[in-house]
Image (cartoon, rainbow, N blue to C red; front, side, top):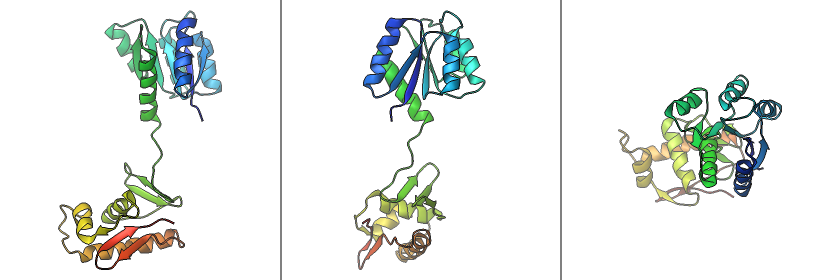
Length: 223
């Protein structure tokens, strides 16, 4: 689904250029030319991001930003002819996420929009099959259920999930999962695989993805 972007600018030529550029990049842009209308539009149906001109006929963009920040944390990108450092500082201190001065490149604006959205709308944790790996939280879930994993169980499962089907030797797993650890016995891998299998069975009884390759090591297979 295309993300809605609200453009607030009283110059139709600039607005048309931005509408075209954003629509080409897969967004759903809308335009209004007054600050008061923009505040009500955000209140009625919050967009994914607001591109806000500072010089509006009824309210300054700074006033619009203040009004929006009273009820919303929607990302705001200021677009203005003012390039004085004090104006940039004021805009950012009011809660804007970025600041672009005119004249500008539509491609630069769309690139900045994407950068802001990546920052405020992080991609959902990804993983193969029923698994989801949240590397920032160091958490793995299966079928929507979070697994209660120790430090090494998490690292071991993450390593196996990185390349489903690949057969890892015990030595490779020791070097990647237990690097720098006092644990040096290859039997350590077997012990952790056993506890990891038990936790996976508890969370998903029909799932048994870790395969043993006798004399070699382990792999993770998904049907």
